[in-house]
Amino acid sequence: QVQLVESGGGSVQPGGSLRLSCEASTKIVGLNAMGWYRQVSGKERDWVASITRLGKTNYAESVKGRFTISRDSAKNTVYLQMNNLEPEDTGVYYCNVNQGLAQIDYWGKGTLVTVSS
Image (cartoon, rainbow, N blue to C red; front, side):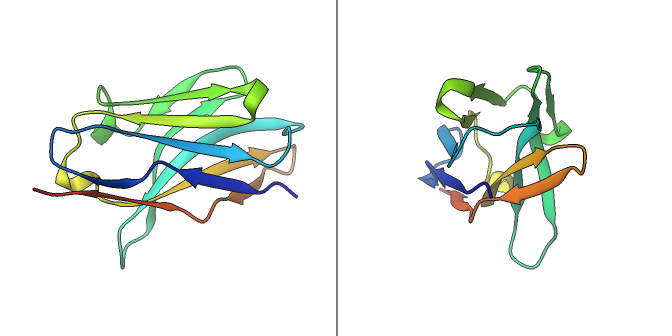
């Protein structure tokens, strides 16, 4: 069982930056991808960015050019650098790990990001 712990959320003004971290409790054998999702109260959880085990990155259109996902395999950690934040980026950010042929998903408990003036 993989446990994920997110950190780095907080409140920031528009145009500001935050860096989210997500540490896995163990080395992830059979990793397919790690990613970040965002959920606003009352809405579905939306995909934000992901990075495959080979290091290929993908981003939602709304964050391209502003967010960067990266991974430190030695630390079992994935990061999300968020720059030029907008109020629409507000939400709870969840870390996700997809593992194995069965493509099992693991989720963290989330970290809140608030962008407001």
